[in-house]
Image 1 (tube, protein in one colour):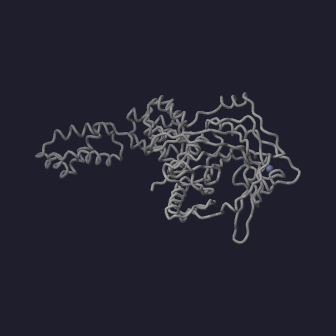
Image 2 (spheres, helix red, strand yellow):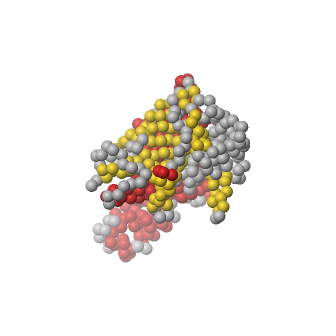
Length: 483
Ligand SMILES: [Zn+2]
């Protein structure tokens, strides 16, 4: 029997506002516990929340970027439950009328593009954080009241790969919009997954389980794979799946029960009486639309048309906005899209990955990258030299032509110097020379390599090859011993 998975995702994205959603406290991460609190976010009696306008604007931005309907009237609701990191005893969220609904985004799958529906996007406040230490627990309320957007998808995904593709696409949009830092380790982009399985071709949904708070793409993939397998096994052995919430144990690679449906909360939602409903007028939406930055899929389209780059290059260059912007800055100073793209993919991004840093963390600037290409064109530098220069440029921000002198990487293009090295190499490799002359053409590369080695990688490869060819053509096998 063939089964298919049905997956829906709920993402919580922490917004990059300076202050919290209903008070003026800072949202900075990593400060001394409980130093960023006030009577409002501590849930003291008699205080009144005031909505942070920026949160509404950010929600509208995401709504527009995900083709959602922006609901001009929405309101907040109280979601009641007790937990030590939620001092008010309720969370202010949106329930019946969220700010955005009926959106979608497009993901790439192995069978082509696929549309994934977004049911709703709503605003809410985050809870605090519990720190468990042996026999007691501590509470840090700095995070209490940090603004979140909850993005709920339709159950449109059919495999763990599609789920991960959706999450990557959504995260990229949030990053391009500049409204969330997407940091999964710090929890500013976290995901719950609803998953069920059914016989292929069935329209009825199976009984679902919910996987809570998974904090990396790799774990989401593994948790879903495990859970789908587990559910299929249960059905095939004639048993019934229990509707429950499960946790992913990343060290064992399995999901374990957390609570069943019977234990589920009844949140007793009701409209938040301390906040006015949210009214948004058309002019405000139009204004935000006009200032929306270019989105990932728009950038991909433009790169395709404007620069004629292969899809593979475009995917890598547009993956992060900062990289795409830097690439275009270099391109405005040196108009060779493919040469720059190759250098970005094979050298620059590799170098940054190894250092685990971003362009902005280094002393890199577009002028220096472009100067490397000019030195290559002028044959003052060869590609090996360019590779050797790059780490220094990243660390020091010095100009390549200065570093070139300092590091002695000036390319050797002088024919008499190269000729004497070639002769030296041929003399000391007579065995290989004889083999080459008797037809082992492959050894040409060996001689090139030897000259490169002797010149510390600085020989001009084009001139070297020409000279070597010339020289080898003049030697006959009988001359070798008298060289
Ligand atoms: Zn506060």
